Length: 128
Image 1 (spheres, rainbow, N blue to C red):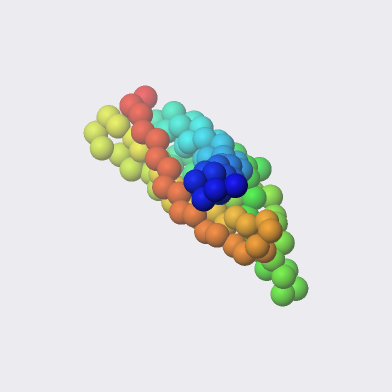
Image 2: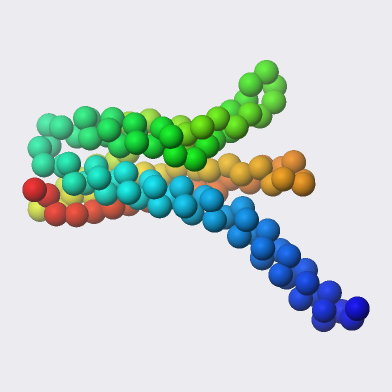
């Protein structure tokens, strides 16, 4: 085996590993986008923003997982740990926008290390 083949093999294995780690996070972010799009669709009355935040956070309670410390060790818990106040709702004329900033922590399996990735997800649409 020469150096070129070894380098190509390392690149393919590394790329496959990164896809194995990244794709589930990306799919969960698609669910977050869907929940925010549903929230934007319900932004008719400005007095209902709190209700819309609670509904969107409720939809996200079953999406993905997050890590919490329990008795000195990290355990994986379902949900993204999104609170209603984390969802930002903005209005500009006839446009409404819902956005969410959140972090996902991934456990890198063979290394037993954690990697945190920041996500900024935003959806906007016309107000009813």
